[in-house]
Length: 483
Image 1 (cartoon, rainbow, N blue to C red):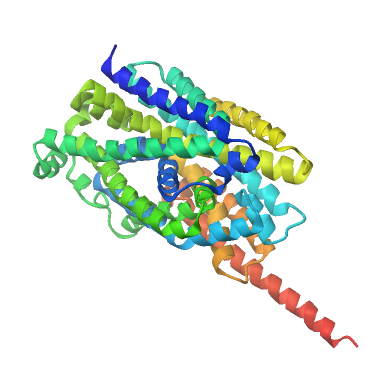
Image 2 (image 1 turned 30 degrees about the horizontal axis):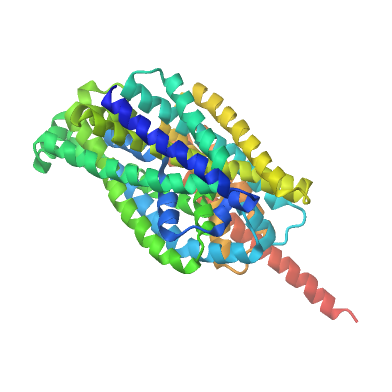
């Protein structure tokens, strides 16, 4: 048997075994959605990182670095800053407040926090989650097809089918327990891949000092931090990369990890683990693209296949199979988490809280599993028809979620004057801004849609909250003057 294929099969067997084992641990909806809040810091931090980066980190970002050179470093810096901010300023308060309110999901948290009996926040946030996460999952399926096509020569469609079936299986079986524990294993493979592969590539180039000459022969501008751009064009390019970090505090599948840790006091340890992972991983992803450019620029037909190509050409077949599994791991660790959040929005936020509060735990888990299959099928169909690169498809969904939920959660946790109507308006403004900005070419080419979406949403929340308080104060003032 092909050693590369053997290494990949061993990885799949381990992942599927986790699904069989964890099915016994999933007895309630809280188990399926948050693993009963019983996870330790190592599992939570690796799960948050593996889920947070997806195939974007091993497929999309190296592809960007191959195409744009060192300009891609701004995306890495922005992401690391966003990860740091989310762990330090969001994780602790969200974990404490969500347990106090008995919230299992992000829509659940917002509704309970503002006592929204109209369910307006729950409905709007659930629609946002289902829409953007379905796009997000489709990007992961597309990435699976690209990796398996580059590695084993099978069609992209067949590769997508294999990846989708495996993810759906273990997510349905074990819920959050399966997702979190497979993330731990997948996160380890990802970090080994991202650290080892660029080091091997640097040796293949003849040493670190040969990187610049090799890139300079292709285009000297690729060695600069903005591809030779100046003035406003340079500022916008840098802001676009850094702005990706704004999205971390608004991703429901990452926030769920903070809510699932067993002891809030262990979040500090988790943050150290997560940041160490992030710095190493983003360095590796950028340098896979840059070193790959110097080695194989003329062989590349699809820039997002540089990682599996480097693994196959530079490493022994068995090891290449393991490292290529890292890309599949990245895709799976994100897709399973997103499927879980999407189906929990359906089973918990819509069915349980709004349609049948007396539903049994067994029924709720079954609805979650059926919902997982349905969302997976829709995402697969979208992946088949997708014409964009994984990098941009992921960033679109990332922007939608980050602009919709990031400002709302940040102000909910840190600004006491935030109101229900402020949060609702922020979610709507953030979503609409991203949808319009992304689909108007002149705006999309001007600036990454997350940046205006985030700040317009932030402004909407502040303005609406303050106006609502002024109105309330006037009503109360008139009431006090009545005899």
